[in-house]
Length: 157
Image 1 (cartoon, rainbow, N blue to C red):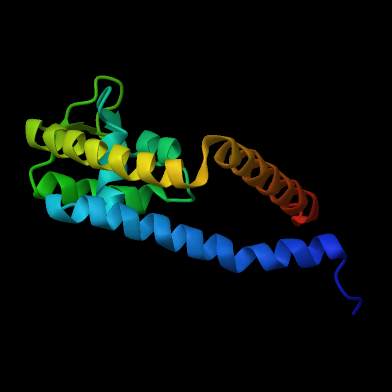
Image 2 (cartoon, one colour):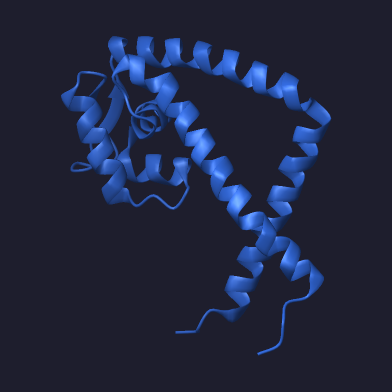
């Protein structure tokens, strides 16, 4: 088996720091959501409903990140059980209810957003806007290249 190219080595060296960054983002989100008795996943699901009530399938598409409709359904049920959201009738689909935040849910998301702004401002100032924009662009390029490769090498049906 031939060795990797220098570019392949560079990408491979990026994997562990990328996982560490993901872990840090999740830890920061947990620190923000914990005092509000919510999880980061519950924050995401509630956030997807702030501008309008949505069915679980649409929330899963909006959030992305590879979450299935079933996992979003479990999180949605949890936020309803804790009183942060409620189910509403869907005029476009009899069985697919709409998830809508309650006043308590909106209040919690608002408080968490303020805390996220403090965190983002602190971290952003430490790194710098230009470097963060460069990083965002590079991450998007790596994701696109990986998706292109997977699509090109996926077995056809």
